[in-house]
Image 1 (tube, rainbow, N blue to C red):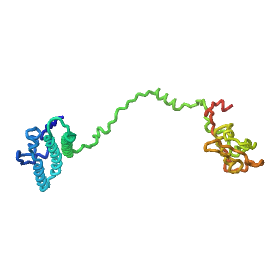
Image 2 (cartoon, helix red, strand yellow; image 1 turned 90 degrees about the vertical axis):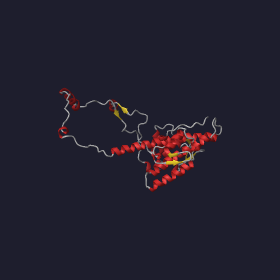
Image 3 (spheres, rainbow, N blue to C red; image 1 turned 30 degrees about the horizontal axis):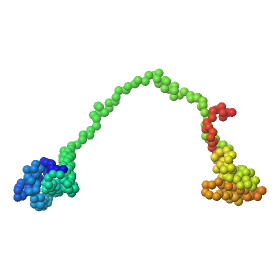
Image 4 (tube, rainbow, N blue to C red; image 1 turned 45 degrees about the horizontal axis):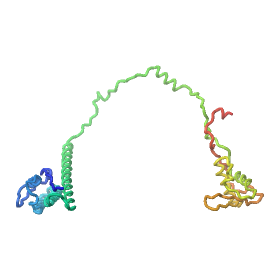
Length: 300
């Protein structure tokens, strides 16, 4: 990998700093812009330029600008930092031996040099765009948009009326709007209807009949013939009420195992002993049945 240094035009390196900054070195005396041009075109060896002396003279230049309260001092310092870093990298690259780069540090230095060149050109692009936008804002700030209403003779004008609807079409529209809708519905909804009432006391009585033989029954067998899911739920609530009333004994070996139920109440036990908090019947929805029937089925 050869250590080639790209040529850079002096005007691109320093678009504004070089206009007032001059240097006086052992091998060069003149504007900073000319120095950059000679270095960029390889007419002046960067290794013979004392960057420390250039930096000292620039510091004196910035001090003079600050004494004059010049707003260009900050911009000049920003530009010089970028340009000085680029020149320092150029000088380091020139001091490296020619030919293939075997040292990883030298290779990293060359990559850093290319990055500095890219940053320098990017900085110039942003500055040029900012200057262009500033000039456009300065020009446009003196303009005022014209905002006036239409002249009276034009403001009162209306578009010509385009009428394509015939009287026959209006008559057809009126007929459809006012005609009676006597269509007979083909189906009658039954979603508002409920099935039979299910109460906790009724299901408690049903459990008593199933358990009064004194044997131990699994809960699955107690709900095997339930008519709906709601009956299963209410029957389970009834079982809890029976357990609270000490009418049954519950046994379960492990969680989620079969729940075994044994009747323990006296023979004269009735569901009237249960709490009245469940007296209000629970009305189930129609499970599994069609939600609509024909008018003939309703009348039947």
